[in-house]
Image (tube, rainbow, N blue to C red; front, top):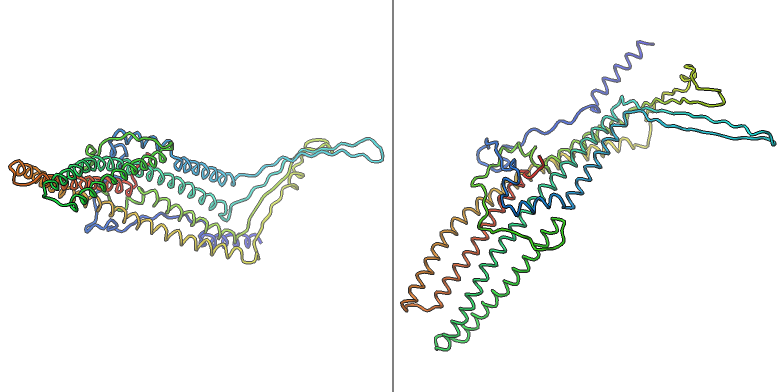
Length: 456
C-alpha cells in the first residue's frame, strides 16, 4: 500500500511538471536588425534616449516648465496612484501563502423556569492554510508581480509622453512668436505697398483694381496676425493645463537661440525592449496573461486546505491543552473539481486566447516603436536639409533686396519692386522658421521614440 502511494505521488508530480503550471515567463530577447529601416545593421549602442532630459533640453525656462509638469500633472499623479494599487495587490497575493487566523469569542446566558442563570463562554481561535502544491497561489503572485511592473511601465510611458508634449508645446510657442514677429513686419510692408499703389494711381501709373488687390492683401495679413495671437493664447492655455495650472502667460525664450546635438544616435534595435516603456508595458501584459493561463490550468487540480480550532472555554474548566483534543480539531480537506458545467475548460480557452492577443499586441508595439524611430529620424534629417536650402535662399533674397534698393536709388525701378523683394524675403524667413521647428520636433520625437525621459 505504501509503495502504491509513493508511485502515485511520483506519477502525479511528473504529470504536473509537464503541464506548464510551474513554468516562468521567458522574456523576448530578439528584434529585427533592420527595425529602424537601416540598410546596414546598427552597431553603435549609444542612444539619445539614454540622455537625461536636462541634457537634451538646455533652455532654462523649458526645464522649469518640465519640472513643474512632472510635479503637478494630474495624469502622472494618477499613474503613480495606480502603481500603489498594484503594489497593494501584490502584497495581497504574497500574504495568501500564510495561514488565515481568526478569533471567534462567544458567550451565552441561559435560565430555565426561573432558575439561576447559567453563563458559559469560550475564546476560540481558528486557522486555515491553503497548501500551494498545484501552483494556484504561485501563478497568482507572479501575475500580480507582472501587473505591478506593467503599471510601473505605464507610469514611465506617461512621464516620457508628458516631457515630449511639454517640449513640443514650448517650441510651438517659440515658432508662433517668430511667425508673429515676421508677420508684423510683413503687415507693415503691405501697408507701405498700399500707400505706394495709391500714389501710383494718383500719378496715373496704376489702376483701381491694383489698389484694391493691394488693400485686400494687406487685410489678409492683418487677419493672419489675429489668428496667430489666438493660437498663442490657446497654446499657452494648453501648456498651463499640462502643468496643472490655470490658464496664464508662459515665460519663454527665443527660437533662434535653441541648441541641440549636431548628430543623433538611435542605438541598436534590441535596446528598445528595455528603453521603451510602452514596449515593456506590452511585454509585462503578455507575462501577466501567461501566468493567468497557468492559473487557469491550476483550476483543474485539487485545492488542499488545512484548518484547526483551539481555544479556552469555562465549560471545560481551563485551557484546551490535551494534544489528542487538539489533534481532533485539526482538519485536512482536498477539493477536486469533477464537473462544473465546463467553466474551467472555458476559462482556460479564454486565458489562452487573451495570451495570444497579448503576444500580438507586444509584437505590434515593437513594430510601432521601429516605425516611430524611423519617422522621427527622417523628419529631423529632412528638416536639416530644408534648412540648408532655406539659408541659401535667404542669402539670395537679401542680395535681391539690396539690388532693388540700389536700382530704385538710381531711378531704374519703383519702390513697389523693392517692397515685393522684401515680402519675398519675409516669406522665406517664415518657411525657415517652420523648418527649424520641424527639426526641433524631430529631435523631440526621436528622443521620445527611443524611450527618453524616464526616471533614473
